Length: 205
Image 1 (cartoon, helix red, strand yellow):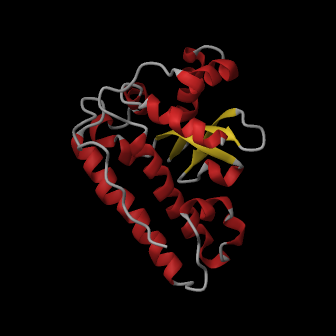
Image 2 (cartoon, one colour; image 1 turned 120 degrees about the vertical axis):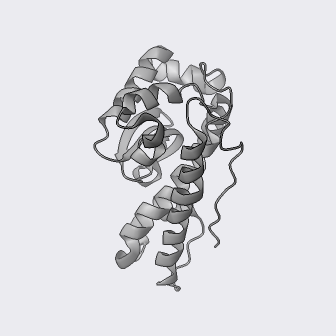
Image 3 (cartoon, rainbow, N blue to C red; image 1 turned 180 degrees about the vertical axis):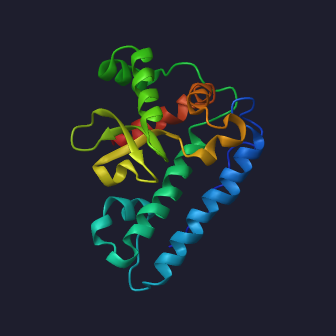
């Protein structure tokens, strides 16, 4: 199968002043493309292994040949995570969720503010690089919050991610330097709740 860098659904500067254009350009064009290039390179060493999708690689990591498993975990994860990340942000985003996901968040975590606080704590707690995730636990259909290191995906842990925040330094350092909490707070102004709602509905199917 082919792995292709998805186009951003907005221009590089659309998320300013919360995420600057230069960061978006480097993050999308350089970092995301590097994950794709590295994934292709790893899979080319095992031409007999033909995955059906990026998701299948992450869900079924144990069947990936051992000698390329770490590279696949890191780079398929990087490709999948970022492909989701770009879509859950938009110009003039933010606010609070409505619809099914809004109701599910209140049912699972109490108020929106309580949910936001838990999500932020996970984002701040990641040691080094990683992500804060809101996912649907596949066996139960319940919403779960997790913090995962590096480019690990909830798909590898029986969950379908519907919303995630990248807290690798390359996602914010040009603008926020070492002030990760400031970046986390700013990010809520660009979240695309319509896409999170769509992701949630698809995860329940």
